[in-house]
Length: 438
RNA sequence: GUGCCUGUAGCAUAGUUGGCCUAAUGCGCCGGGUUGUGGUUCCGGAGAUCGUGGGUUCGAAUCCCAUCAGGCACCCCA
Image 1 (cartoon, rainbow, N blue to C red):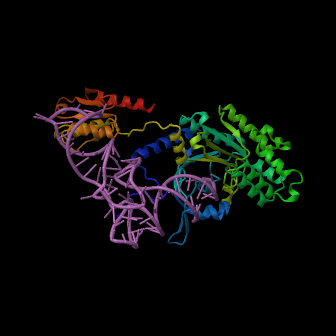
Image 2: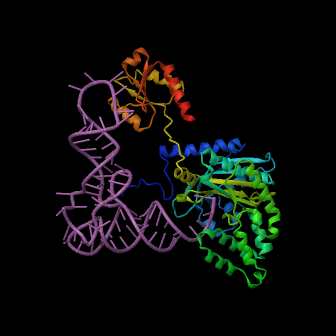
Image 3: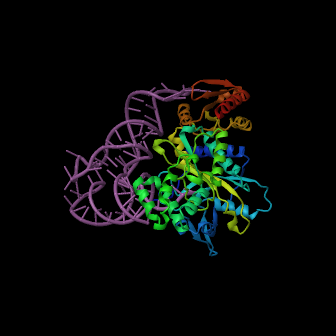
């Protein structure tokens, strides 16, 4: 039996052309979040399984975690997300950190799931978190940073929407207005989360069935439906309009508008899956009809650091996955051409490999990235190879060039070539490199 | 984890009421058209046990079972 060349189910190989896309995405992310003062951290890919159990106590979560028992009988997990890890790290140094702490990371994460488009078993996810800020400024900064990343990818505002909601508002609604008990509230949250997957009649019927007779005497089901259909906070019914969480939402949205973010909206049906969110949540949606899906999101989760037995620390953050982001960029044709880093492909003419060594050295010392064709094939074959590799320049070196120290630099895109000494050739190459970066 | 769909050379496809299939076509790939220059054209060539394993049959790419991988929905939503 021969070995398969396929990568492990739900995981990807990154061939150089794929890796270039990844590098482009990651470097763009890094550039933006570092502009906001975030510092990069990292951590082991393995964690004790317990830190995921503690988070929610949810059995189902554990079924999607890759886990094993190590030789010392420890239960170990491959991290499925970064938030527990970063909370652990902050908890570990809570007393010595200089708050507000602004950290980011781009970890590789795994979950045991059945793969589909945009949902693999493995992905990379930018995690951006701010610790130690209670106020709405933290939520605002996080959303602004997420938006700035989209802008850095040259996304137009019409291409995506930022939906915003408040978990506190939802809790108030469920508990104080609808008088739901905790179990009912959890069911309701799940129901609202799936609202857009059902038709309206089915949804209202299911919601209606959730209420006990005494819970609907005050028109609670009607109040809920009115609430869910609201488009702006101004339309919220009754006293909810002036609830503290709503006033906070209002401040947040005013700040966003002031910062030039116009494509956000209040969405009372936005829940987000994770139980650990405590207040503001947001989610960015692709508006493209072919790819109309949730891309990424985040929010406030003040309780997680406290799970490590220390004083809770106010936290807001978001995670942005590479798979959905790449889908977005491809759908909207936002990926630029990404040729290899190699500046020039050296075409040797005749038996000059040995004699040309000092020249290679000169070019490389001056910072030029050279790939040498050592095959001894005819020049036309060597040129074809350079073109196939998508390298911009071919550098010809033969007896003649070595004698007079003038080298032929051919632009493979335009087909023109020029003869110059090392210095001039290097500056031509670097000029092009600079131009390309812009 | 549940249901449904798909799987033919590197890629895209044809062929699927079982037998003219010793599997075809396009692109790509390799070599050549006289010795230092590509992307056109011409000529030639390599490359597939039809995802894998098993079964039915005189005979299977075509039917059945299993398995692997991908896709869609559910679940779940990093």
